[in-house]
Image (cartoon, rainbow, N blue to C red; front, side, top):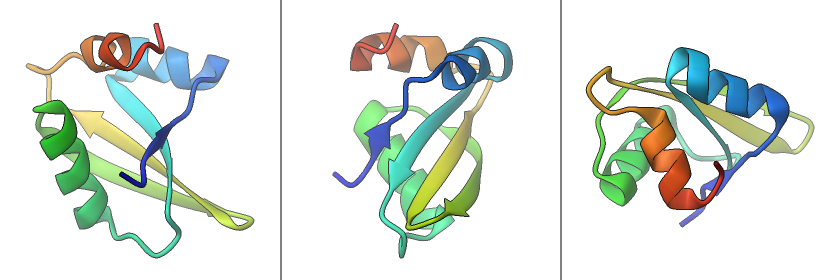
Length: 80
């Protein structure tokens, strides 16, 4: 597993307001690979993945479909 969940004030606000989970991931991973890994790991469906490369790190913002609340996944991960 190359996904590391990010727990910052902004990340928690995005979970609550936009149903988006934030992860730090490997720089050479594609959006498709990230989406598949999130779906397989947590048994959810992702609507879309946005990626940000900052310095030597890549951050993935994974928006889940409405029927899968991000807060449930965050609770499973122990973020909330």
